[in-house]
Length: 93
Image 1: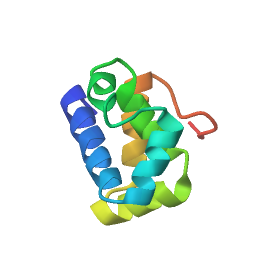
Image 2 (image 1 turned 90 degrees about the horizontal axis):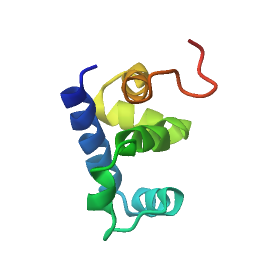
Image 3 (image 1 turned 135 degrees about the vertical axis):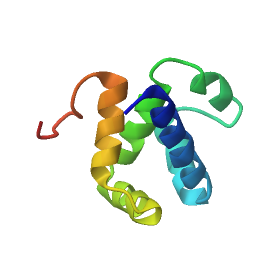
């Protein structure tokens, strides 16, 4: 997965999260970000990996996103790998 695809996927995940108030609240709580700090954080290295972590580390959320977007959960794993250079913690290689 190239950087452009990874960033597009990250943006889509954020869009999907923001469409659900409960999900967005969970994202703010777990990430420590606020609406005011999101733009600056998005420009930092590791931001996309954090978004993929948020999605991948809660299976019901991951599966709901993948079902809505009609993509395989492996797509998220591949994006995480692309951003981190290694498999998700606990993932089978």
